[in-house]
Length: 397
Image (cartoon, rainbow, N blue to C red; front, side, top):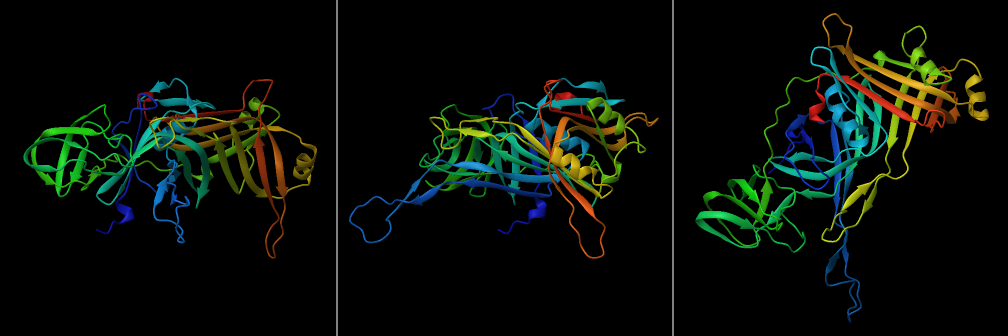
């Protein structure tokens, strides 16, 4: 069966804890996805009297990582930030909009689902590793690199199903220690041409239960997870580059004030932000995949392009002169009197340039291309704060 990529979607939902998958019932359109399941299968190179390389393969630890890209709209950004930053308490109301604060820390674990045609891959124990916010043709794009502790894509039967009155199935454990992990009550699996709704997923990690049904299948027949029918709801517009204001200042207060108006904000040609958790994958008994994901040293960088004005930028770079930076992205009005808008505010309390180039090209203007490191500000004990104002109550995060 051929599978058209455009028929895919992103389904997600935060888990109640790090290890329990959940049916991801919140749907968003995808722009691109490249999540890889690396089985680390290699030739068995033990010496056993052969002149050929090997007569079999052996399996190693499995890794699940990659990235996906979505439009940076106010709804999906709440979840993207929730996966990579620590969320505080939400405030606000439906009429005025909800404000969600995020700070560096442990993001929540998510279950994600991405279809391949009529079948779905379900990743669980997912956390954000690196978030890149950038603009493509003025539209904000959010590219999130993730790591996961498990995935259900397919399984195979360990015991044949013999016709009418079937109420359970056991999955083969040749490769997966707990092959049912990732499935949930209410999921629809496909065995042959038969769709089966699960009523139980046993703790043994091998057995699933369902209402009595007639299904015939042999040992080793494949089992798939059926893709959901997505419900996207109202599609929100992404944040746009023309509605972005950037302020520089001696401290966060000055930078935020500068970003508050067009008159005091700094005009930029391009801006992108990269936030990294540098996740560590920890092995765990009973799992071929990682058992847990932990933040290592946190970091963030800002990349800017702006028209060359004076050699001041070069001097600031060489002399290590630091500044606070506030970036404010405005979206659609939430309140009818226009006093409340969709909003993303990123506050970098202390930054210094680590690269400042001014390349020349025939017929072009001189552009400052800058890479700015986000630093820890000892005077405020802060580095980065993010605030999102949207129409989603904090209960969805």
